[in-house]
Length: 458
Image (cartoon, rainbow, N blue to C red):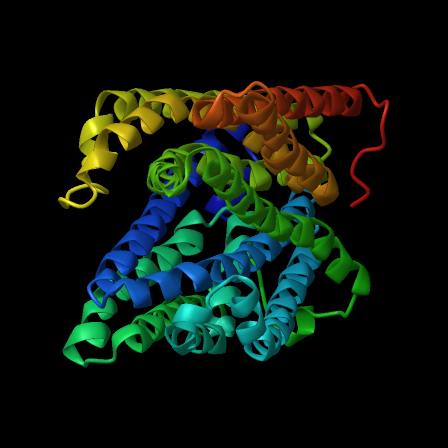
């Protein structure tokens, strides 16, 4: 199989491959996260109504983004396994299948969200700001295709080790969105509709960049020519077997946030919810290094699995945990030391100044959550790389939802530890779940190496 520099990199030393793939991903994720914060800051200037409206639409928008990332993970997994098996024609065909899926799914989700949006918003309790929410949501979901397709193309680029083309367009989208926000919202006076247009139009930049590389410049390792396409429903299935469970993991995280908010409301009221909402944004930022490293492991594990180099899967898994843990320790220390300064970002006004010590205390406690995420995240991502999307989903659900909520309920309500007990429960449940997930991937790979379970069939 003819290789380029990127393919040689991902089929070589797993440690070097993860190092090269991970850091650009972390940088692009940081820009996306920063964009979400900046977006909220600009809209906040319009008043509490528009800001609340965005709050109601955002979970639905994140489900959409989750579908793009999930199907992208499915594409990465299948294509990388073909590359590892040195089946370039099949890798090309799988890339085209993922592109077709991206178009079909984006059209289906566009129709679905536009038809059911108002009903969903009513169920979510957005009646008081329904006008703002519909103005924002209808525009957002009209742009489903440019929002959803780039992450799926990005999955194909990650599979061939072209991390620059996988991440640069996503980063550019975030930057363009931040530039367009104030212009559309205030300069043109379009208000919340302007914010939605900025969010919907910016992804066209990333999509155009990717289409240019693929169909005009044509210097990608994978080929998207008509002659490379041979319709194969099994390929659609193989992508979706990883992609759908990976997409649903976003729903699990959204459900967790809603449930924790409800539990905190019962034990401590709205102040606790405000503290959790603000503090968890910072904790989520701290998770990015571990998530970025884990995402890189999908490609490396997939290539090793396709090549039947099962020892490389173990190396990739252990190294991604090591690298993610080192990064997480550094982030945790920084958050613990500078918790008060970080908390001030969310409590600078006179009306919210009393929240600063509460948010700082939350950050200093919950930064411990960051420390064991590399174990669970790497395990889940490696399973995705092996094409075991359902296994990854079950482990994530068990870790991030079932165990976290069980222990949060026990400590918060049964043992009457209140708000603090809920946080301790989240830490304990997440820790146990991560240990179980990592133990399972170690056992699985060990059995794979020893030939006790069937390996790659590609």
